[in-house]
Every structure is written in C-alpha cells, then in structure tokens.
Amino acid sequence: MALLRCSKTQVDKAYLTAVNNLKDLILAHPDTKKKVDVFALSVYGLVVFPKAL
Image (cartoon, rainbow, N blue to C red):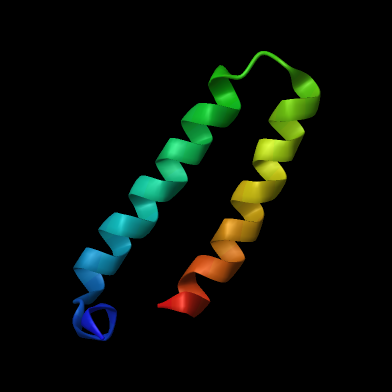
C-alpha cells in the first residue's frame, strides 16, 4: 500500500538506482557470457519493475 503513495520523484530515484547498479555490474564483470546474462536480467527488470509499481 505504501508503494501506491510514493511520489513520482521517489519512484524515479529507486528506478534509477536499480538501473545504475545493474549498469555497474555489466561494465565491471569480466566474463562475457555472464555479462550477457546480467544484461538480460536487467532488461527483464526494466520491464517488470515499473508494472509492479
């Protein structure tokens, strides 16, 4: 219920923090196969996370 009362600014901050963390993981990870897996999960998160809010 608390998520429904969040202001747009708070939601944007949470969303951008998650995206930045995933971007850092993708750039810092040395293994290419795992890099692709992390990227796929991040894209999935970008699609699902806003729908949950």
